[in-house]
Length: 303
Image (cartoon, rainbow, N blue to C red; front, side, top):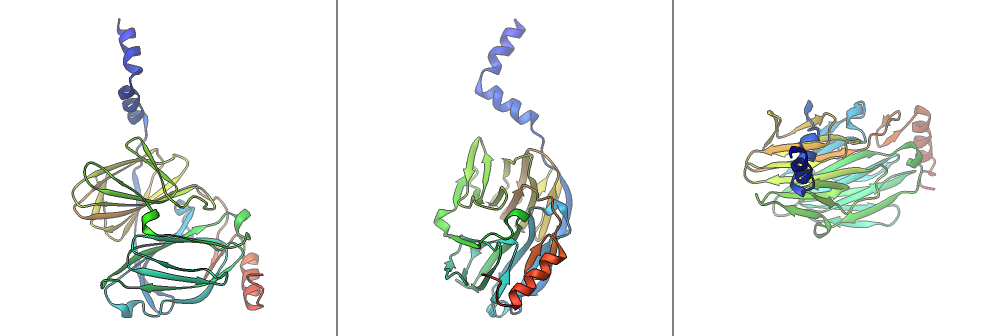
């Protein structure tokens, strides 16, 4: 009789969901990094987390946060400059962000939107932050490109706020998926950015009240969490504003938010290749960096 009862229970959706939850391995917080204040572009004040030499960051390379209520902190913006071998993803919480490049693309990102650029062989672009309603708050994320895609033609796309996938739970927290996929409560949420060099996910989770987010993340992906407001608890460990948590291997990400919390979630397939970084160029060897410099100086960078 026990065998029959067990079989009947196993055929119910509730049992399958429960069994899956029990068998899933939760990701633990294995390292914490603090963002560092610095300047970039024409004297723009930012805070930065760089992971060029940290394999656990991959496929991400760097996270810059722009946050100010004083236009003097960023008025010079980022004048025309080159890139090769990376993708950039810019995401604005508040304020606008204007992009212009050598391909003729002109885009002005609004609050809540994102811009993606794959530099490939080479791009020359400028970027100008623009405050709205006395606030500027956004992020630029550098993503590595695998060797096979570092010399492909450059690409650009912007995603205005209405195109970002949003999901509100019964607890009224807000999850916005910008890139890739995230599974929450049995629902797969797909962001508008899907054509990245390697599969990855970038999402923004905001909670006004203490709430727990449980999201399935591919066990093939590496995962990081950055707190830009408030704090979160991960298996009893606290991660506070301005800190990045590098997560262990697993299938499930579980975050418990403090009141008025904001978190960026990063997950992606690691690129296990050498990284050589010099200024705006990220390649696989010193020779490739030298070639990028020579191409730029000789006027053949975007041929």
